[in-house]
Image (cartoon, rainbow, N blue to C red; front, side):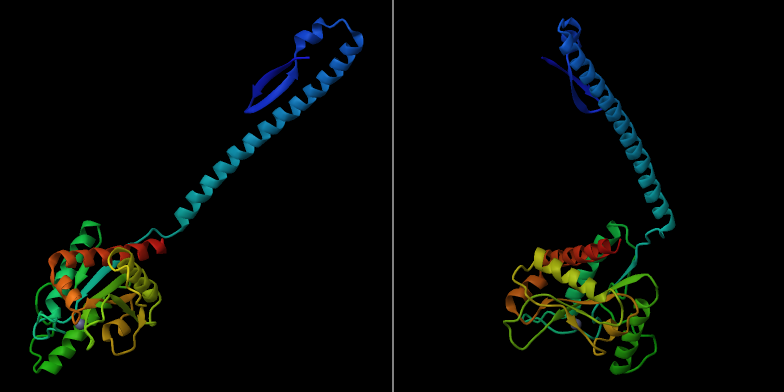
Amino acid sequence: MKNKIYIYAGYIIQLPDVGIYKKSTDWKEYIIMKKLYKKIGRKLTALVLVAAVGSAAVYFGGTRAIENVIESSVIKQPYEPPIIILDAGHGGMDGGCSSVNGTPEKGINLNILLHLRELLRINGYTVEVTRDTDRSIHDDGVEGIANQKSSDMDNRLELFNKYDNAICLSIHQNQFTDPAYSGAQMFYSNQVKGSSALAQSIQDAFVSQLQPENTREIKLCGEELFLCYFCENPTVMVECGFLSNPYEAALLESEEYQQKVAFTIFCGLQNYLASLI
Ligand SMILES: [Zn+2]
């Protein structure tokens, strides 16, 4: 006996060929076929019903799911991008540490900050900086190097704490007595939630994009890192590399590498912010 194949609502259904059953002269076969046909008919009806109910469930379920998404996005606060505050360490009378070639840290910090600010602005962020020229930002009229340094740090911290929704990055270069030391390292404090994750994200970006051999771990700081410790927003002190290492110093002094460092910090920051959404 041949079967006919029907396709209904995505199901392949095989039914006995009605033509053969009609033409049959064998009554026994006729009765069997009639029963079988009835049975299949009932099954087909059930199948159609199941398919209809299923389609309705998928449709209304899907509608409900879409409603849930709309509902949750309405209830959820819209994402407000943070203000990014950048600090180029040192400046003016305070050069910071010096490279093996005699280049002061302050200028390298500033160049990286300027590249990073550009990247952030292109990507729509609001950016504020503690300085964008070679200067100390102490209050006018403050006398004496120690007082000026103290006023300068107070003013940097004031900007770091100016907004509730800010991310702060302080850019520095490292130095050590052993010239073999190299590699970027992030410092953070445990005073504010998020600083550690931000530090890890930037550290990871350095390893994946710039320094695959870098095994340094992010480091918890104390009060000695004034800005990092007393800032009330997520903050990381980015030590981009060691100026005491001749190879790394030469890299850090080049504009091309400074741009790469800025881009690496930018990527680490972006990854951190993406993890919050
Ligand atoms: Zn420094």
